[in-house]
Image 1 (cartoon, rainbow, N blue to C red):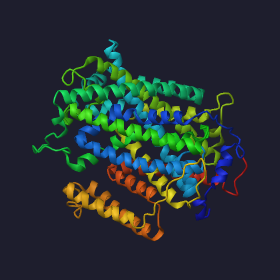
Image 2 (cartoon, rainbow, N blue to C red):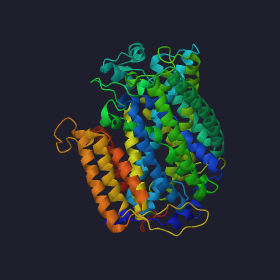
Image 3 (cartoon, rainbow, N blue to C red):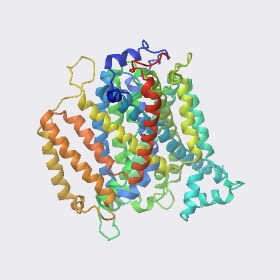
Image 4 (cartoon, rainbow, N blue to C red):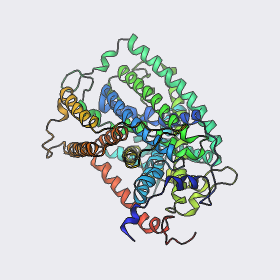
Length: 572
């Protein structure tokens, strides 16, 4: 094996030819999606578990100031969306960031991206399935239907809660009332398993059926979310609750960011998880009628719409209830309408129904994304040929869809929400960094009629100036941002070390931008996504490192020798 083999690349022409079905035997996917469908798929993926579940924990950590983090994340995702759009315009094929990395960085990095995206789509869907179960169970209870607690939660969540002396009555009941087989308590989240099975079946049946189902759910949940914003916003203003937007912290000081900017950044996993999904649109390139024009529009429109919704929802939540009351709240949008808060019972019920709909659509889009990435990796020889099998009737990646259902369903038995949430966010950010970096590596091209073209703005002087302005504003408006950064041997070392590395990266990129005249938009995307990575904990990085190590072992033992770019590869 030559070292250069790790970085062998595929040309855009070769990738497009394979998409057309000329270079592989798996079969072609059906082209049925329009720009409206793609926008709806993007909204279906973005507006779901983040707004209906993880938003509560984010608000508790960051207070009303978490709005700033939503803006930062939206800007990062916006720049990244432009980079995805540039790649999608050049390479309209299934595979998303994996395919793009293959063309820009080479095979090993493409494998790393594909392996990381398993965490985004498959493992991320485990969290969504858990959240779906919570809301579904809540909805059933409002209809006077009660399921045993040990059948509606995960074993690890109950075990960890008991170890931490939880006061949550449902988790205590699940642990105490569960049937015992030997030394094992039978605690399993049945609704989460059932919804995963149903979604897998729907995705297996076909893209057209999935599209119609997704579009219907998006319309319903957008109507209900708009109602939450209007009703909740009106009550916040009419009841004079706007003082909640500047709550007092532990020291009695009223502030929009009661826990400081570090408290806002502590919410990065929950906030970023709310945006995971817009890139899933790029996975559907092969099934789009006009991917070079419609994919960019679908991603950007869905991102803009959902950003506005998230900001408004955050303001409604933090205005209706003091941010401290969201500790451990898994259904924040229903929580604000409870008797002790805004006290509107019918809105509670409506939100529960909407949450079930919203998270069903997220499950659907993510469950569609993963099989298509495996399809692309199999076509390249990095996975066994069976992963590129397309059903002769339904024209879907049938085997990959079934495996995705198993990858989501089996871990439901032994994981919990917190672990999955952190695990998913870091992998997606890592993929975003490489996508933005990939655009910086590919040569500029002439504008072509009818295709998206990333505007070129020379960052030679602009980027260094922006860094200086950003540093000045941060120091002026957030004095604690730079304070004590020189001392990494204190309790905040886990936060300061990544920040110091981020500062070094910014300086290096400023020098490279000055010398190489880098394009500004992908450069800003790389920097913003790298900044969000500084909010990840040491545990996040440890688990992510182990996951990547496992993936590299598989690549070096199988993918490297079976790659279609390997001249010594044995015919399949």
